[in-house]
Length: 242
Length: 242
Image (cartoon, rainbow over all chains, first blue to last red; front, side, top):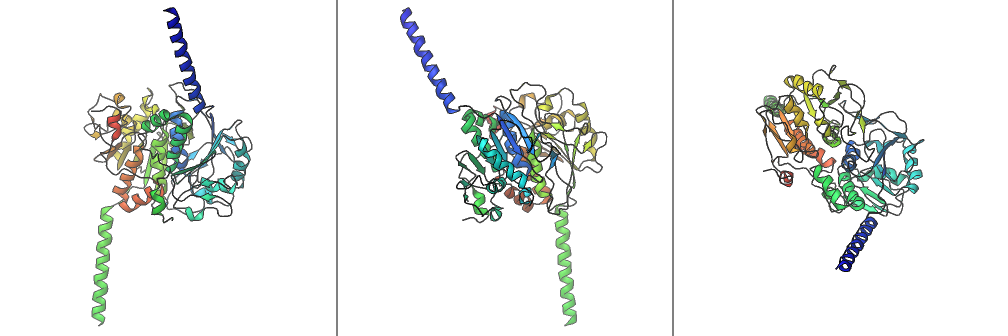
């Protein structure tokens, strides 16, 4: 009787150990250290859509965030190149500079926005180029993919970008731009379509890396009906892409 | 011949005048001066979902933005009351204080977030109470409605709020809380459900006030499939609300 009990306990323990090992293998060593690249006239939701999801995730999962820019001065969404009838913008505060970036960065998120059209983004593009080899993952939102393309890290890869701004994407490279995609995954680079697509890409990333349950919990907490199909893209047709 | 030409010009001018008058009547005197209330541990997307839509609108429609807080110090999303395993937050910079608010504020947007549970929000609640009488519109997102309720401005009104946090909403008042609603409009107060619902409420507000074409343009630019039905709310059921 004691032997049967002991055997039962042994089997149960083994089963648990195997299940845990399998689970740990599935989400082995999930990234902790996230960074977001900031530049003048970044798109607000490109940054704060993904960060909303990650802010919620960080309540229970260990995550660190660095906001990385040219200097530690506040970075504004204010249009620089175009004249508007408004005075309407927000400024957020970086935590690190390109010269003194965080150590052990594992995921870098690159937003888009009107600022990606600026002619003076050598420092931003250079930071992506120099940092990519150490990253576990690179995520771009919207025209953030243009910066990644200019950094050369999308060469030979599938990627997508903002559909309204499609015509302006970099052509002097070998990126295989995908027209119809909410987001595209190629190896360790995730590129999303325009603005709000960054939320869906981030939730898909959370599902892939941290698990489906957490992704669903976060989306539900956001009261967000997410798109889970990476090929859902009515905006490609809306903006006349073949 | 000259008379017929003169008459034709007169008729055309009258028609144009009438059309312009009708158009101006439809969106008479749309608000220009927007403010967003900021407090520690505000919810990022409660602020930046609506502001993304308004940032885009402001490229063509005259809009001014003030970010109003207790002091001019940066305001962070960092949890104050709960312990997390993370170091993950963002800080944004106010432009005005409660003591020196913008003049001619027309629309005040009040976000929610874990910070609305803080016991020290007398200044924020007082600012809503004191400012509401001068506003054209008050918009709350998520648990921002709790602050508006505590300010007394929702007394006798229909309103909604975050569905997951529903149980914590203020009860010592006469608000008619609506369980199943993406957003609720009562006179000049718009209250939205949790977090991402603020985007749909803001786009509905833009449609109502600035016109359907602009609202559609903005949503499409965001590549956002918006909910246009104010009673769409799967999250009420998900969180067990009758």
